[in-house]
Amino acid sequence: MSQTVRGQIFATLEIAEDGNRLSRAVDLSIMGLILLNVGAVIMETVPSMALAHARFFELFELFSIAIFSVEYILRVWTCTESERFNGPLAGRIRYVLTPMALIDLIAILPFYLPLIMPVDLRFLRALRVLRIFRLLKFARYSRAVRIFGRVIGEKKEELVISLTAILVALVLIASLMYYLEKDIQPEAFGSIPAALWWGVVSLTTVGYGDVYPVTVLGKFFGGMVALLGIGVFALPAGIIASGFAQATHKETISEASEQCPHCGQPIEH
Picture 1 (cartoon, helix red, strand yellow):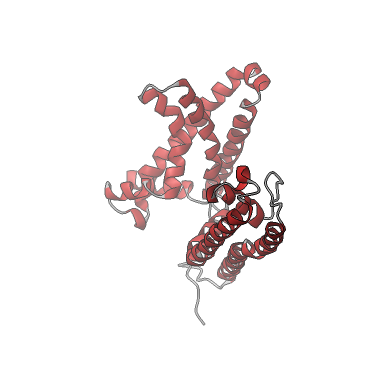
Picture 2 (cartoon, rainbow, N blue to C red):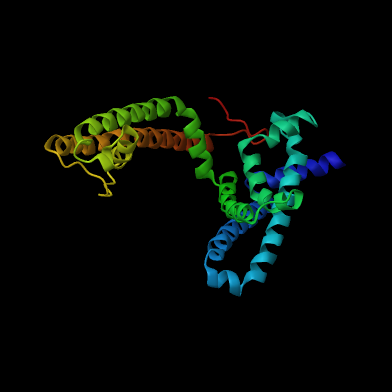
C-alpha cells in the first residue's frame, strides 16, 4: 500500500502529464508560490514596506518554508520510484546531489541554518537574500528552461571552445592596450589586469566611457576591438540559438509522432 501511495505522490510531484489535473494543479500552485516569494524578497528591500508589513512577511515566509520543506521531503522519499535512483539509500544520495535537488535545498536552507548554528547578524541578512534563488525552482516546471538546460549540455564543447577563444582574445587585447596607453594613462592602463576592464567593456560593446584610449594608435586599436566584439560575442549566442531551435524542433516532432494507444511508444512505419 505504501508503495502505491509513494508512486502516486511521485507522479503528482513530477511535471504534469496530459490528463493529470492534480499534478497540474500542484505544479501551478508551486510556481505561483515561487513568484510570490520572489516578489516578497524584492518588497522587503524597500525599508518602508519592510517596516509596515514585517509581520506579514514573517508569516508568509513560515508558510512558504513549510510548503517547500514538505515538497523537498516528499521528493527525497519518492525519488526511488525513478529508475535513475534505485536503492533506498544510494538512490536517494544520488538524487539529493542532482542540480534540481540542490536548488530545492538552497530554497529552504537559509531558514534552517540559523536554527542549527549561531550566525552573525550580517551573515543572516546575506542568507535571507539567498531566498531570491527560489526563482531557480522554476526550471523544474518550465518546459523552455528544461530545453535550454538540455541545449547547454549538448553544446557544451562548442561553448567551451568559443568562450576560450573570447578569453584568449581578451588577454591579448588588454596586453596590447597596456603597452599602447600605460605611459599616457598609468592610472587607467597601469597594468594588464587594469586594462582587462577596458577590454571587457569594449569587447561587449557596452562602452561605459569611464576608461578609453587617448593615443592615436590606442584609438585605432580600440575601434578595431569594438568591431571585433560584435562578432566574438555573437558566436556563443548563435550556438545557443541554433541548439535551442534544433531541440524545439525535435520535441515538436516527438510530440506529433504517432504513438501506440496501449504502451504510449512511437509507432515505427
